[in-house]
Length: 361
Ligand SMILES: [Fe+2]
Image (cartoon, rainbow, N blue to C red):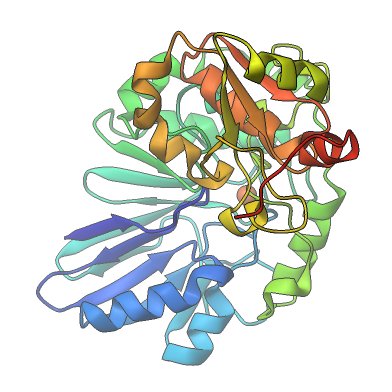
């Protein structure tokens, strides 16, 4: 069996293919990466028979409709999915084969009404119903979400064999897939408690607003083929409860440093590492960059943490355009155990307003 995780960012798309027949399915494809998928399918001489969305996504536009148009494959979702472009509807317990490999569908609503998990012989694709380790699970406060249904779904997942390795639809901080047995120990959403206690726990979370996510849901309900059909912020941990807590609930750990202090620190004897987490083209754009920065886009940071292995004792100051992405980057670094991480308040916009020097090449 070929099983590959495809995207560079936090949305996980899985290619599952049979080596012999070359038949393939894509699970949770992202519209903006469709050209990459098409190239890969051609290079590997695969036949894409199905695209499957584990649920209606709220953080990205699905590539399902576009792939169906271009490759004439089936577009598969749960029977409760509202998107009209879906050509094949799943129900709980549906079984099929991909080559020699049996695949079983488990209906797991809670994050959305149409959420499914896909059970293979050695792994389970959980969509946003279950994430890895302390990431817990997808939020249940979006349209179609239901904490009680989520608890029921988790009980069904808990009843699956312990050896199955969990592959979620998102991973924001480079956590590695591990077995359901390990998730039972590590994942806060799988800890034993009554249904009512679980519902109270979810309803008590101080989640940030998600208006833009409602627009993305609507775009997916309408089978959007245009990446601009809804505004989506740069790769933020939008689906993860931990990453969507209201300001103050989990943000107090990252200290901000104003630009004048950053400038003084850079001129001092033991300068911090300045990490610019914008996209490379932004560094040569209008705002330029601070001389000496290291540039790693926030979308790639989790995959490139090894580059920081020898910098654990050094102060790291994270910078972006105005502070949002830098904050996410700082949290990723802190999550990975870096003790001295700060964010430059106001980002490059504030640095430039203060009249401090920048470079643009
Ligand atoms: Fe989701």
